[in-house]
Image 1 (tube, each protein chain N blue to C red):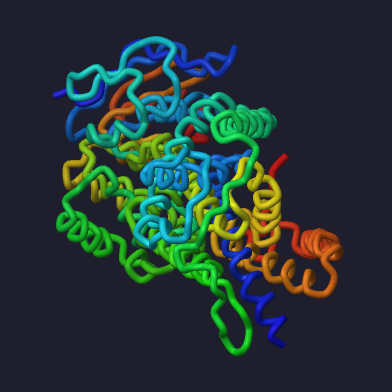
Image 2 (image 1 turned 180 degrees about the vertical axis):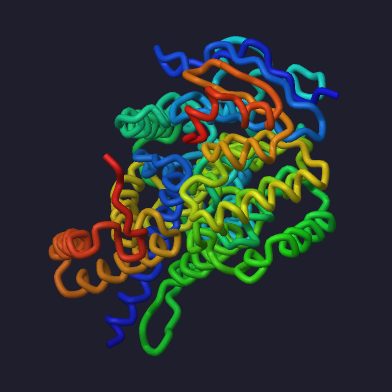
Length: 236
Length: 305
């Protein structure tokens, strides 16, 4: 079943067309990755799905419903969780309060408390630092917090925008093991990454985006073998 | 010594008023990087609306004078609630007229729009109430309380108690409640707040309602000391603005501290030479800002240009 279906999506920043008609699908339980260079439009696409930028043209359907132009704060209520580029954790609030805020759209106090304990189990570092201000965490810890915060909304679709950005190789491996674990639990994930190697290895399917256009698509394994992808993104 | 205690008491009361208004500047600045430059005008309906409702209730014209017997504590509490609610509601109009069209667009249009909104409000009040000031009796009476030999006006005690209670309450709300965490999340990063499902505009409107309501509260609290009139706001709001800057516009606790500091300094210097009051205060402000540009408790961040 298709969870997310995007058709001919265009986004403009002033005179610049950042997305020039993107179409892609994410099926339920799939991990789909989007690779591409700086400024290719990866994050713009994520922000468009998350209702954070104005859409000039095209449609976004989520579970069959047209959600084009929906406001950001309503997106999460539909079941779209977003771990944004740059993490954007609430630096002046505690780790625990960041998780509480992640569940802002929910009202089941007991369930929220249970989920906080659950993610403290998944991310023991966050548990150790639960009373610390999020701004004092390391980059890797902030990334874990951003993912946990997104999961606190109990999303059906998780948007992961550049989770490895600026992290040391060892920490990147940790982040990917978390993504693998989420995938095993059946989470549907749309992953944007510059670390094309790891991203393709983990993905069921993948799209290559260049200057606002999808130029290639296929299974993760296919793109890993693709000559153009290898020379442009894998440094081979 | 008794004169010193008396001055200290009035300073703390006045400082509490500055602190309340400064806190209002902090809340909207944190969420929108704007605040109401016309806040002084919001003290005007604060002082007049509640009192006029009491006047009407006892069958007098709305711009008359209340007798002490008519100003019971119940009446004062009801008047305060009315003022806070009305001025809080005006905060919604302020947001839609003077903030929303300009926020996030860069530039300083919001400065002029909020000043303009305040002038419109003040002149509307002038049309309704006229230029005369209305004497407002304190619900605690006019007889001074003798504390350690010093004569302290009961209204000053009432102001300090109410203001501190409101400040502590608001501090707890901002730190502990769902609304408070959401407001701080919006202040930290509106996009991140939207991502977790916070309706940023709703929070911003509530920030302006709280900010305006605080000015309304300040208006009715200070009315028994200054009288209620169309002209009470500007001087007080300017000091409150200074208090916010000195304490740190980004820190709620800093704003409260700045308020008390300015109030006390003003009263104590006034004890010595009245004409030195403003000179000392504004010299002090300049010195503080040179030494600590973001205020005593403000976040030491550099704004990106």
